[in-house]
Length: 208
Ligand code: GDP
Image (cartoon, rainbow, N blue to C red; front, side):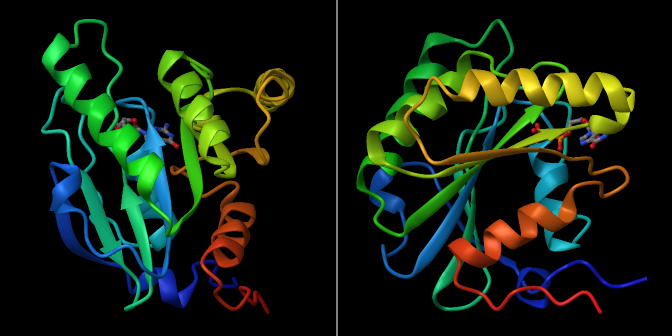
């Protein structure tokens, strides 16, 4: 079987974590953000996309420290793991810190070329997702929506969700695409890899 992961993404390595806008690395080159509510499956998606089982931390624990995490592919290209939250009882301080950090990042980050927005296919387009879409619209950042955990639904039900989300996304004036994905069986890997190659100016993946 052809190897679907891109060699440049396989090389991704942790470089730093920023807890405040003042700690962000130099704003040059190209980067792609990954965002999603807690437990949506974002860390699993980052691991699946890079072909590295433990690059991003996967955990069921809510309320971990809210940081922006940088993974470098090379001097000029980065994947950025943005903090999520989503459990009902998020303390105000956590939400406030999250909002300041994220809003600051979106507003000033010239190297941000696109956002991969990860949603659990069974719980898509929640408040968190809508806020992210608002910021992408405001900053003209294109969005690639991954409806992940598609293995948890039948093919028909997953396809229904895809259509519903596709329709809802029309409300935002933002360049967007949406697809089904699963980290469990790597369904939907190819389209997201192709999008990352475009955004990060990488040679396209050859699957011969
Ligand atoms: P994060 O909080 O968004 O980073 O979510 P994680 O990647 O830590 O995933 C949350 C939970 O969902 C974990 O128990 C994962 O094993 C599970 N999970 C993530 N992606 C998938 C998937 O595609 N299919 C299934 N069945 N479970 C998944």
